[in-house]
Length: 280
Image (tube, rainbow, N blue to C red):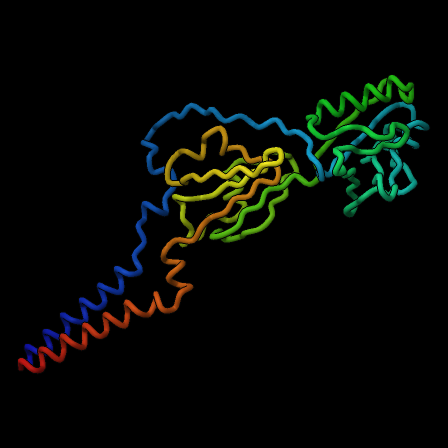
């Protein structure tokens, strides 16, 4: 009887160990920067990308001048200008080419770049925007205002209102992340998504980026320092990051894959117990 109890305890121990091994996760696969040694200096090659305006970008164009009357016309927002405390009118300007209405979100006024890559501004008409940087478009609008003698010395400022990135898959807070300052890094995006879940594959993260009319895909690992590469570290407008689930996640979603190993372990345990009982 004593021998039977000893065998039973041993079998239970083996069964528990088998269950534990099925649920084990390699800690190195969960860690970032495994290849970074202590007190290491890495030469950063990444630089913030030069943003160029594309179709469907929502622009906020602010024009300031001492000529309040001209600005009252230029900076029309739903028919009424916004005048700053300094006496100059400023607002996001631009009317939709199709409807003549200015698209707004709350107090934000924007000018949508149409499918032809153009925007429409009061008194200026159609202005080509696609393919230009913000600075180039600011200079172009300023030049047009001066050449047409609408105002003498305008100040033009442009912001991208719909600058965003999307992160999906095995992160704690998947979704669309607005980027109001128009600059975001990959570590910042992961932080804003509240990090990856334990089921996320850190060794096979996907970045999808629209370049012109082509979608470019890049796969990389968070387990090393590759995320500091120049093409990965700084994200660009409309970038998509997808974190794939690991085998443990797949097993959790597949009930058969989860229960079969446990069933086989139970059968093995029963066989051992019966064998010990017969021998006894």
